[in-house]
Length: 259
Image 1: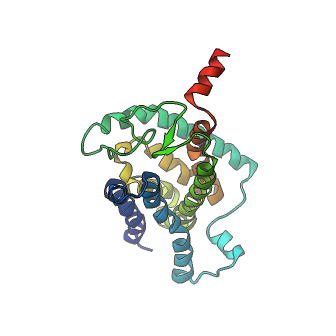
Image 2: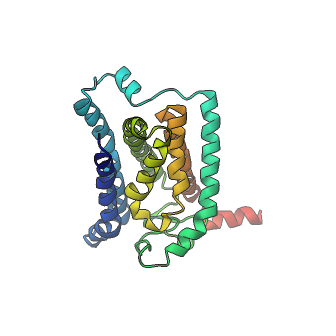
Image 3: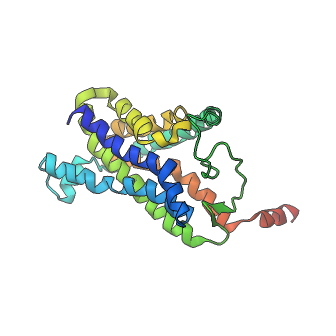
């Protein structure tokens, strides 16, 4: 598979998501579709399609056998060892640290029109808006007692991340290792950051560590499950924020402080 085809595989969903974030979502909202559906459908549909696409490419281009054993081997769905878990924990810690250290850069870039996020984008995704804990809303939906939102959001989010890992790390990374050797993770990570995630342009610098760490872990451990763990755990704070918003309100926190 040529480099240009690999870039195209990142670019098509990346451009789709960019259009959805900056143009598609406002259009759907203007037609009366709630923001939470308008936004997340544009993000998740391209990601969810990566799973069948990766398996389809393996089947068609490589004449791959569609058995669980063959897919596990080709996509490196190897079990995570105890040593791997140590690397995963270290990777997650580094991701969080670098995200915090580089967050101010994102806030500065977001002030410039070229890098600014869409005005509708709520906190904590929009660096120009103040984020308060506990949150009361999530993309226009009330969080108080809204367990249904969390039960729907988490599984879809997990499947979307797994779909990404199957394509980027399971399918493409082994191909890139043949082409770039030990530096394949760099090429993989930069495409993931600057092509797929171009919609997060205010985060163009801040995203680099996390986008490089996942493919590095996948290549080092030779396990797509390992990079999926880094990916999922790294996004888990969002679920925790939602959980806090669901079970807490400003009033209940004040009562706890007074008590």
